[in-house]
Length: 464
Image (cartoon, rainbow, N blue to C red; front, side):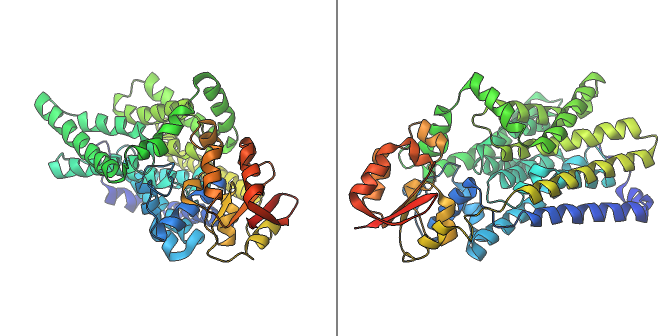
């Protein structure tokens, strides 16, 4: 659409030093991803690893295994889990992240030269939140990859029916991996609406994209509906937890826990303001992409730092576009500014990775050692799924997610937990854990179980 000169001629003019800079930047960004592969499971990774463990053993999602995300996500991550457990799943997500960078490059090529588009993708890869999430068992990066791919296909010249259907299918699949990519729907539909003089053709193209996306959503929803339980699990308790005023205030505080990423997003937002101020109508699409994503994340409660990754590609694109506009007459300054920006992000990602402690629960935690003495077929009730994952045990399907959000929304009650304890082999109660909000859980544990082990942070009970 807006791509500049012939890519072949442009690449021919790229110096060896520039190519070397691109290569070094890309390699360094990938190294920061691998640095995050240390065994430091987060709560979400514990939830998802337990979900994958049960689904891999044939337990049905939604009807038996609770899912806090749309149902395509576990099955999308399953190949990595089957290939190598936690590490295999993380490497599989890393492959999706690489595909996302390819899609980012193709989106950037609508506005920038090939070299600058590559630098945009490298910048995205280097941003601390992207670097951390690119190798984590979380749904954000795969969903972002599918949504960005939909946008990249929509931006390509030509509007054949097949291409529009592909855009819709990619968009629908992204939504069925993680609903927080919803703002991209607006952006893709705007692309599909561009350049039409015939109103009938405009309506037809929008209808094709919308119908293809809706088809994926409806087909997936129907397959896993289970009398409305899919809605209750993947959407209902999230909706029940929304709080506008206090939620926005909390979300701002949460975002500041990722200061490096916040700086990139702020710079991207300022670049977007400049695009609007200069009246560059042909560059407004990335502005809409960033603005709708940031607004949606700000209003969604609760916000977690890994959600910020969804706003990184449009922010990086706008930032590079603004630098290009200001320094186009001085290419050496432009190259130095972009390389410096990437280097600063890489340093931030490296520092973030080095200073985040490895989870003690992974290999040297006493609770894991106690759990490993249980039979491998034991079913464990606990509010720390990371411990169960580290010990190679499974939790009951309805209790793969015991989050604060689910408890406060009333989606997880003491009666439900106690019903699972009645048929479980063991219970691990952690000090200060989420079951502390459900005092009845400890009471029903002591009625049916005997204490087998006690440590400073947890107590293990087994069936009498």
